[in-house]
Amino acid sequence: MITHLISALLLQASPAAADALPEPASVQAEAVQPQTMQPEAGPAETAPAGAAQPAFDRATAIADVNTYLNAITTLRAHFIQISPNGSAARGIVSIARPGRLLFEYDDPSPIRVIADGTTVALEDRALETVDRVPLRSTPLWWLLKSDIDIANDAEIVDIRSEYGFLSVIVRDPDGEMDGDIEFVFARPELELREWFVTDALGEVTRVSLLETETGLALNPRLFSIPEPESRRDSRRGRR
Image 1 (tube, rainbow, N blue to C red):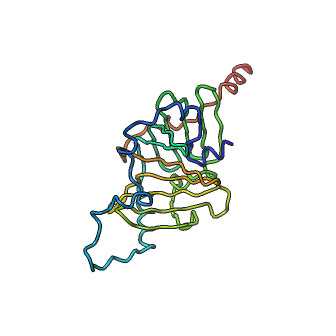
Image 2 (cartoon, rainbow, N blue to C red):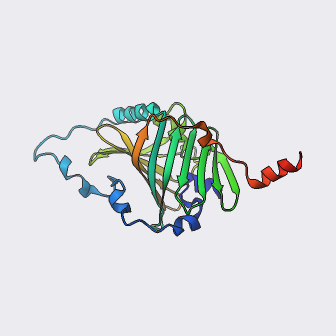
Image 3 (cartoon, rainbow, N blue to C red):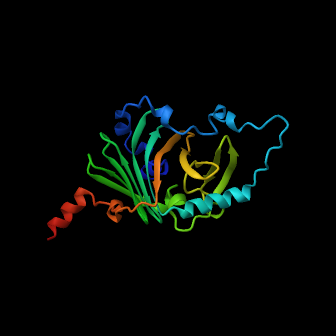
């Protein structure tokens, strides 16, 4: 169960908590419009009649994505997460490459998702539980590994450029992770704006990033995975 939840980039980490958050009226206005779903968003890029369209260079696009992602040392952004049932959750995501990430969901959600370099943990502070899976078994690996090369790290299902965005859809070539994930970058200067995770049942989770900042000094303690209360109690009893 935990592997599936984290592989969906944690949206269903606590369905009750996510559903408890009313969908903000401004979500649709604030969220980035994905090029695959909103073709009407791009009239400004419509070429004059008869003008030749520049050829899309797949290899160059892949190289650009690799360069952009590998250049990220730290990142922090507000996020809006839309679940398959339409409910919305908000919070702040912090990244320190390689390997470390923190999703902090706004109240009243008790959920945090933490990657410490090797492990991804789902912490439920209300239930005082911490579930863990290897980082390598989640889609977060493609963003957090030390040397990103998406052509070698993943099977590229599709890559395309339209309406001012570059979209890259990847899946696990070994089949250990179900479904696929679509990363969406704003162009011409690449900036990660959102991603869509499609699970084995075809249900889609959308995460949009807002107010992104990079190159920040982030406290390494942010990415420490806490021990569950039961384990702390056990250790106290051995003293």
